[in-house]
Image (cartoon, rainbow, N blue to C red; front, side):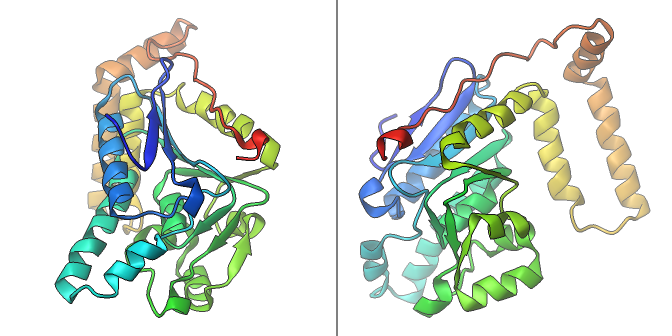
Length: 275
């Protein structure tokens, strides 16, 4: 499929790359980009050859949030038009968050507002040391509503109060401290760090990873009740009885790699050329 605001790569070794491709506006998104991200992630999720998806940004930034020209249009919208528009953004974030494949955010430069929401919606986030973050909505008289479920899940409510209310910028080191990103890397080692993580991801069973993502969403925040204990027992019993579970156990006992293991394709970028 041909895209206007993103590019999608599917190397033969199974890593899908979604590049936000509006570098002249620091990959700020508009309604076109929102729709294209939804389509790309759904197509990659449906492709059995894709083992994981990396979300990255071309140019000097990951994503600066909403495009200013798009925001100017919204100023004249009715409530109903604004609701439909916001629902599109919320759908994009939910699509990224709920795909069955593992997702990795490759963060450099600015990750502001909705861009920070995209980071939080991914399963794993790796940031360059020079990356900066900001929940800037309050300074515009707005709220970070659609991104809030993902940011709060990543950072906790206490931290969200500070950065959603102050709308101050913070560093990659602070993003790591509060749990928004799980790994930091020198700028020149960002892709090598991500490739190392991808190597671990492609070693896992694809069905097991999809089931694990579903399990995390189902278990997080629930009290430890008899129903939860029964649910977790049901999940592991199903995994053990599955074809993939049986292959994983056999390969372990036979001291060989399971059938699903292939080499991960390295993430490639033009950052060394100043992009």
